[in-house]
Image (cartoon, rainbow, N blue to C red):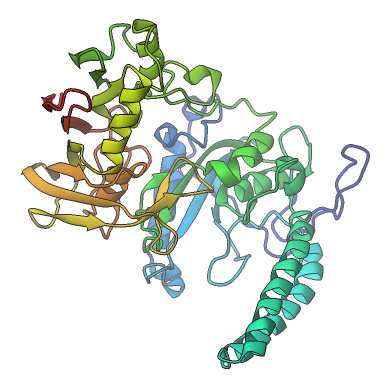
Length: 500
């Protein structure tokens, strides 16, 4: 294994009949930080835990992460000002074993840190630096020139000719970006335990890679381990510092690898390792008697959905068991789409379904006019400030990490939630939540976001903290449903007490 500071070979063996340039690393090869004392053989994971399962963080990866957190909180990391607004960062650690048998870990940061791609002591980027510089330095100069020309034109926007020129510059910048991006993406070379090396564009083909693919901490760590002839054992990623502007990360909390950027990349890079498959949520066995019926007539049915059962089918063949399919089996003569609204997989409570297409349409109109009242109850992980209020935080899908939602004041859709504290105790707060809009994960994001209640729902695997026993369900329950029957005109009110 090359020693720190040694020059790496400039080429890799032929892959698929071609040679691929290897990233040059000379003086910045990061050290492997050894564990002291060294773990016993029985403490090593027999399989690489899935980086997409935040509940499967191996004790050694947690140990490495906590050591890294302590370092980030020290004076050595102070110049990076990670606690300043917008400066927080996702970091990662990879536990690995050298051919000698010694065990330690590598550290990495996502993207750039302190305006730099490379910092001594941290894993290097996955692109060929020289090849990328050859493309980007010239391209960056051109993009800066276009930006300067645009800024000059903006000072005279009242002039019609300036407006036309401004649009032309924007078109030129966009066209140049479309040319540069694929060229830069081809400088990313990602290998796996089998020695198969592919570029980012090859991994995502025939789709286009998302921006920043290959720059996350996890790919950097695995690439560094393979370069150093280390055997990857376990990985963990965590956020440190101020929350991002979307507000969806908490300092010191662990997070799974993102699906949009890292899903295809890590699937490739983990080949050849004995690794656990990513978790499949929604495939757990649920009693055949579920969902239980709360109310039923000739037109509609209200059921109690248990946590762990999907409302509608998922895309995978493993995710076809759901409320809708179970209701179709119970009511073979029913027409239409049945489920008028949805509850998240991990949420329990009242769910409304229509038995015929006309009732379905009528109920949907009630929802669109906000004439259906829903009330949820939840336990939050934290002490909420105040006793009641309203949250207005626009939301949109995180395109790099579906199904997560993020706050986006510019492109997000309006999302409004009223809340009231019901009980406090043990560092938790029990609240009633009334959504006035129906955005995906609305209550979960509004609870967790710093500009919302700043206290995630207990057991929230997407927006909260991992429960100490890794087994606590999402403590969110749809307890009340009120509406006017679309056929009879009768006022309907249903309540189902939360099981927690």
